[in-house]
View (cartoon, rainbow, N blue to C red):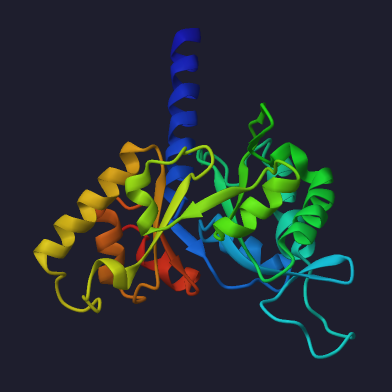
Length: 265
């Protein structure tokens, strides 16, 4: 009886884990969020990877690609729109942002200017949330759930020249053959137009598909993830992501694309 009960509990846990993994959508949302509810809504659709524009303005980090016209602006801070709601999920779910999802969550920051100043402020703002951060810096490794990445190599070099940072780097197509350390560059981002002229309607040319699948395999062999950006927001692109085994599609229309990843869609 006891053995049957334990088997029943195990099966239930495995079913819950499978449901959570099924709910995960291979999407990076690149639309700037304006408040915590937008991030929680994204999580509700299974989207847990994000990209945001960040600017240092008078001692705070704001989510914006450009300087506001007025000092009375209502722009959200990075902490309000991303860090706090992510940490809320992390604590509520006992160390997981999406229950049952085992992978790292990526937060990709586009630093508009002043990279060193932004990093110093980010490090200060991350202190209350450091438990959820995954990083390896100066020989110290910490396993959390969130990895913060930037795309600009020059900016990261400038930051690291002053102090070794917890930031990782997003690579590009030109980095695929360099086989750089996956701890430092865990993600490769490829523009859709770099790999095919297909517009997302009809069938993708077979030679393009085989080239994309080979590219994905090459990135995975380096223990990196791959994201395809600037894709048409079509169901056919979702089919391409699935069949090529690419890890993410990067899109400003995350909710719409998440719907296409639902079973039976």
